[in-house]
Length: 434
Image 1 (cartoon, rainbow, N blue to C red):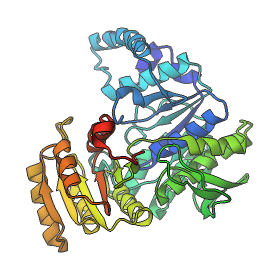
Image 2 (image 1 turned 180 degrees about the vertical axis):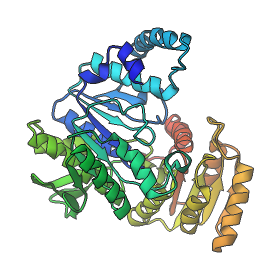
Image 3 (image 1 turned 180 degrees about the horizontal axis):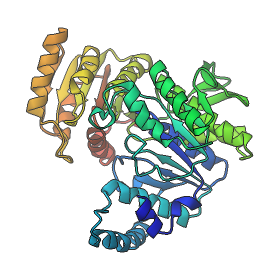
Image 4 (image 1 turned 90 degrees about the vertical axis):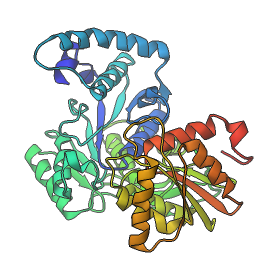
């Protein structure tokens, strides 16, 4: 990655960066910081992955995707360098993700962004984003995911994530496990990097909504509000427009990083900070795409994110009948996910997405689900469909006005279902949809 960027003129050195790693929540935390800075009048680049519907979603400037002409120009420039690398005998052939990261740096340098928020793709230590000299480093949390690559213990996984810590650069983290905190403290001492931890150095708590509820731009639902205490300020009535108590933690972390930048001289008026939090939209992250009956899409694909989804549905929706549409990728801990999900749904519709060969075929998923049902004594109705469209039609046939439909298990099922629903809004969604 360093060799590739050097041949491109090291665009990453011209972009003030906030670098974000973590097991879950790193995308949400990244978009929150980007939106707050953008609302304050700055030109802000945001790099996240994977995309939900279009590749261009990965590289945004003030929320706007690359224009097709821009992408063609950037790829043309990049391809010349890649051709040189491919011809050399030292094995430096960039991967898809490395090329995408390079395109992000190129676009952000080209657009002369004031800040770039760069989300790590996988791990941290060896990630292609880990070539920057950031203004701040963020590690959202640690849980089990990609264990074949990152390790089977919280300590091992944390060591991979902590690889983004740089000498003297402050680290902000929402980790809570003692073994993870110990690793972060070790790395921070070695790098002489100030470490700010959730519940020790900063915190957030819910506040009663003052006045009329503020409606989130993405869902149209009332925002929760939190008070954030940082080492430098107490920030009141911060709206959290994304659903779930875990988003309150992500918001606390994002606001703390922004308050650090404010303390360093970056002008972010409190009202603009609040506006950025209200206006942000983050597709398929506990996203309400229909209100009557409620249809929720979520990209949860590991145990921790599934738990957060279940908690959010229990706290935020009153419909007594629950229908789950579920599909999953082969490298995930599907049994753990099902143990958490099954007790909360009366009807479970298994399916498979069509866009990725790593999916678990629905026949195999059915066998796994039946095994977990026997193990935990679950009696949810189990239905099998061979495509997202068939799953949606079956869910609609099973639904009443007292039904909530939830689609989860993978980015891929969330993406295909979102395109199916929102791409044919007039035909599929009922009145009252967002």
